[in-house]
Length: 445
Ligand code: NAD
Image 1 (cartoon, rainbow, N blue to C red):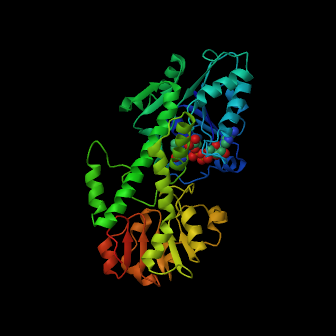
Image 2 (spheres, rainbow, N blue to C red):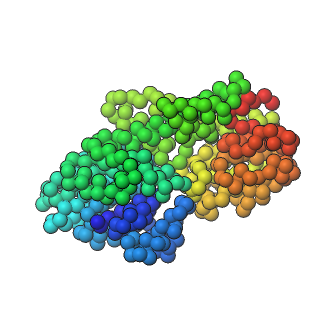
Image 3 (tube, rainbow, N blue to C red):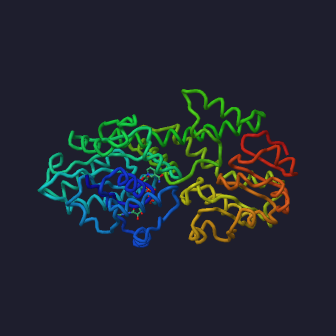
């Protein structure tokens, strides 16, 4: 089977690498010249565990190629996946579909007349997008008939950055939205290498597939927001969030995943997808009150981190040296999209704090971001901590977990640690002489 994957981002590149590893011939199309050149040099443009090995081995075996010429690949493709970005639009809360529609138009112009092709969206797109793509192709190519010469399907992707390869290979389910047996059969055949392992394939209509993706991310955002609120209540009533979280997660009706309190959800998906879901609700006259509330509560939570730092330090932040550990939105990724750091750093700087931050994988270019103007980057966790008044943990990279409380105490000029990921042992931190504030622990200064 010949697959074309348009977009070599987290989803496109991981999907292309995994599908080629399943034995398919895959070409990955990327128009960002810098990104393409790096891929052609066998350099992975972002951090994702195992991805480099997979890309190298499948390239070496001739099953994975990279190009920027989509038009040359269309004729021979059985399935054309659209895996480009769908960021929040600049003017509203909708998903910006300009990248998706540009690809759809390009595909339309080169679709062959003598063979049948399936065009499938892997990008997260609002309800009705597959139908719109179909209409655009039909308008640009009146010589081709939808459902005969081409089929447009929805195949949303559920992988998580940081464990993307494993998630792609072992998904909880695959969702395929189609209007024809042809598209359903072809896409089901594509996922055959994983289906014998008992992975269910849900075949449905396109609208349901599109909405399932948003409903999933909306639910995950609600779950995180809920545990964050319960953690805040624990801080007031003196309940233990760790034990509570464990007991709650053991309830089979609830499940333990996405039930860890933190600085508020961020990343490339949940913030934009909850906004887009809220917008879909508004557009159809069905306000999604839970989602709207989660967005508001989450935004307030991220914004309140600077207050928490000042309150814990017991002093205004003017002139304070703050060490930050972790800038990415979660560990095992170099992705900074909607990371808490993008809100917290400028707010701390606005209050007069000096920031020295360390992150193992945040790209060097991150320093040029306007949100990080005035922030110093350290090249190790210890270098960030040295002589700081306050230590703030924003991302739970494994290497931070091993830091010794005694060493932290010795390196800090002050003695305040605000941990937004609960990575340290509270007793050990306190024994080392630190004022240690975790999420969900009773807080009395
Ligand atoms: P990304 O920004 O990392 O990658 C998109 C890539 O597409 C970029 O490299 C861009 O240069 C390229 N591109 C844009 N226009 C192109 C064109 N015309 N031709 C070829 N390449 C083009 O985005 P991502 O994180 O991979 O997300 C892609 C989609 O998948 C989004 O809709 C996102 O919501 C969804 N998604 C993302 C994740 C995730 O964890 N990142 C998980 C599930 C679903």
